[in-house]
Image 1 (spheres, rainbow, N blue to C red):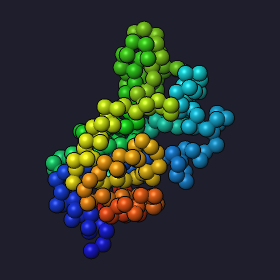
Image 2 (cartoon, rainbow, N blue to C red):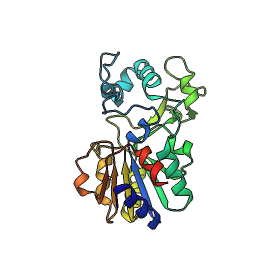
Image 3 (cartoon, rainbow, N blue to C red):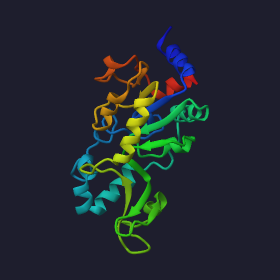
Image 4 (cartoon, rainbow, N blue to C red):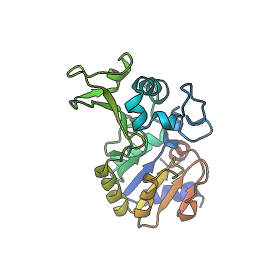
Length: 241
């Protein structure tokens, strides 16, 4: 039995699956990842500093114009559409097999595909809030603002609800992710090199014997997987659904 057939069989047999995904889930939708060959870290920044610096809390506080210019040009992809992986996961949730999608992505594609229980470890660009009064705004408000978006209620800065470098992850979301992973019978990890902590450490909470890693290239944790598949995740979901 080849790997795809084995995965198909395991999915058919399981009713408590959790999916944990990274940037590779969205690259097939045309959204570049961070560290891949064509990732945004590979491009020479037109701003004279690297993307990791721009997406830090300190830089946001001190250089808001550059921060928002960068986000609008390089992080927001309104035309991107969910791919076979997003739709496959939404379908598995509908069937009652998949209990949660845990994602490092900030692009809202899982929700667009129909997934309901999505834990966004790094937040989302699709929700924005005023740092002064807390009023919430959608992504279009930010995109349609000139320069730094300001709150129409109090004039405070409106920022995306994402976790910047130097900021802490939401511990409530992390705890939920840990609980889902600790209690599932099958954990599928896809489109992530498992290089970024603390998110990559979530794998340590899985206690079962159906750990599946789907990633285009090998990861440092392949040896821990019960099944490792080196293909595009959308391609894999097209075959198993």
